Length: 126
Image (cartoon, helix red, strand yellow):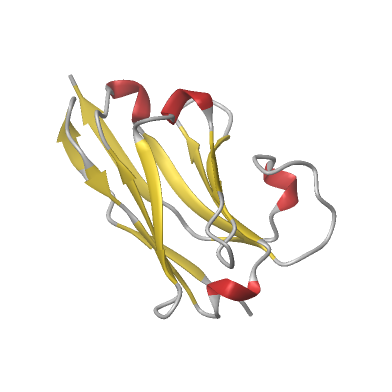
């Protein structure tokens, strides 16, 4: 059973930066893609970014372009999304997800991903 474990969530002031992490129980190179989603209080989940671990290609949602960057360490089976210039609208639970096949509904569609972590919470205050 594949497990994904997120960490690094914190409470911080607007304008700050944060580095999250996602550790997989299996080789990240075995996944077609891995993604980050977030869900703010009272809102629907939204896709934030996608990476193809085997080649390093990334896609970022428009609302985080220029502020969000994913790095990876395939030897440790980990992803490290870095968020900068945080604002209160970035307050959310952030989830790591992965897919290794199956139906594909788009790189930032929740239904495309089979494996999910429990999430790590980020709170940004003004």
